[in-house]
Image (tube, rainbow, N blue to C red; front, side, top):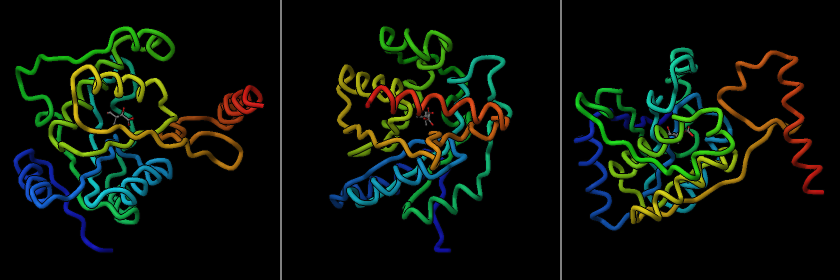
Length: 214
Ligand code: PAF
């Protein structure tokens, strides 16, 4: 396997990317929480096709988990993630720790309140402010030309688009198609939590979407 630079410090990330930006290279970022699957790989490949430099970020962001959520048990197969990044042609991985992203005293939160209220937000009232805050921080750190997100997280990408529009962020947001198992289940890092019965039941979502489309 070719070696892949993995940086955890902000100064290192900035100096590596500043050089490339200064030489006119187009930078693409795929923000992730790790536990990568073929959906993430498709985002990295889309970035590879349209950008000169592909950055993956791997950070299990504590602020988007509520107390009692699965933050502790969220899968963290870091070495496997790096192999998938290499296979998808990633140039650089940024994998900070929580103290780097949220140093003591951090208090600013970015929220998109109306879009965060319905749907998933109705069940997870603090989730999306955690997402938009960390995504804005990652965009500020990487300063990419393009950022890639999955359509599976439909509400998330809507919020991120609105945040970038409202706050004049220059990064273009690219939304890529959901990748599914052959039987229709959307790929998700959390599918590993499903029992056989829950996994069967979950197929109702793709079936309902297909029926609605037809
Ligand atoms: O979609 C995810 O994996 C996360 O919500 C994101 C965008 C990486 C922010 O932590």
